[in-house]
Length: 227
Ligand code: C5P
Image (cartoon, rainbow, N blue to C red; front, side):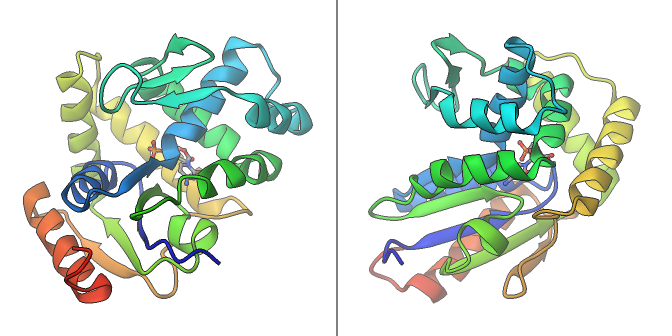
């Protein structure tokens, strides 16, 4: 087991975990893992290379071979096999494909090692669905962020519009509901808080308030030397 501290931030789509994880990683100077981006890239790659989603062995094989680069053309940028897919992976189609490949056990196993490799000094902030429960069970701090479905859809709407991507609120609400159901009901790594996670309900909180609460918890768990 590695001594490198991990802060796991899990939760459903639109819970704010991506924004909170990025802010916490920045304040601590820690490495950031956006595990959802890996599932999104795998989904887009399956579509790009016309790999059948029902062929689980081929999807897992693809997951093992992908050349994924983060931050190549600025913070948050994602490249797949030399192509900038930053915007593409965030589309509704990208979300749906991610959720579909995320339900394939062999794909999750294939992405496991890739996720572990982000654990580097001085520490890691990992954001996803199963960071605390499966990938980093020895995380020093496990946070599970939640918010109401309506609030999460509103946040996703603002986020997409802010990025110049077209969005329709009722459609987002419906898609989120479907994705929540698929992510929660799948047999492998279903979306649920780790037993020892701190659950933060964020519906009525601003993002800054959530970041502050998480940073207070980090200081308690990791001590003053790191935080
Ligand atoms: O977090 P994000 O919304 O980018 O994740 C997209 C999809 O990827 C999720 O709906 C989920 O199906 C899948 N995912 C996953 N496990 C993770 C991260 C994301 O299954 N650790």
